[in-house]
Length: 347
Length: 120
Image (cartoon, rainbow over the protein chains, first blue to last red):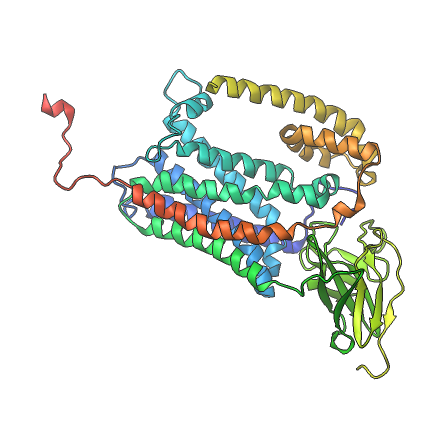
């Protein structure tokens, strides 16, 4: 959470998370470089430079695959939520591995010519109209540029400055970038291998990323938006203490109606940090706590406890014929609202 | 459009970005974000970001300076476009891999490579 920006927000959990990431990455590279050359069965004999290039390239591809799977996995099963927690470090590490891949490429294929390596990369193959022989290097370069932009705009400052909406649009580019990486692999490395293991890994990765996103969006469907200012949320007795019910308001807007003790109140479902789903969080220490990164808001005014300064919109509630209804017109962020109390006969 | 032209454009982009970074990170950031006041080390981490997306930085800086920032936009997600995107993704990704494998040309079984030096 904000107050004053610091370069990197570390804590013991993040140290462990990053350490595990680095160890797994090193093990993968070690296995690929030291144990795998004889088993990869390339059509042509490859040298250590090309082997290193493929080790780092395949590592970056698999890391990106895991990163993209974490989001939908966490929506399908809450036990994956802690893995989403430090995903930005995962992304930065992936960029470093991908840049190493590029360095090996430039230092081998483009290092022995009077043309500058980057200029050589851009001009060596321009057969954009061909399918077989398509300049797959450009697909990788596009993905690398996207990864770079995402990594350098991953600090919390950018979220606040750009707004979560613009920031997310920018970071949505990771999906076309992933498709480009899959194309880069399919038209590049896979064309040169008789061993089908990596082809199978690539296909499974592509199916996992696509399938998990699809499953998450199909299973994540709250009640449809109704017309009029007041939207029916749920029966009065159905609210669980410390938890929320999420209501769809149309145009992508959602509200979360929480029960705290005998009171009900509603705030925006989108966290001010990264638009995390507040309604999937719970009330901890009297505050609604975002399940993604732990940002907290007071339920009755949508403000983070001091000294933090984040705010989310609040909504008015009423009870009507045994149902809780929500006024779809949001109050400006941080506006205090009067909670409604549950009737005596509700447990 | 030649490769050298693209690289020259990239160079100009970075030089303009550097200029924007100097002005924004020394003057602008304090004016539009209270959390940045008195915090200096983290600004070094922002330099590559400003170099990369300086037009967006200038646009947002102008919006915040002139008080045109709409609070509602900060809290509205664009989930409605997700379903369509995920369908495209789920279909396109496997097709790309299978397409690449279908194009793959294998070395002919009945052909033995001959070293040119030996053939002469």
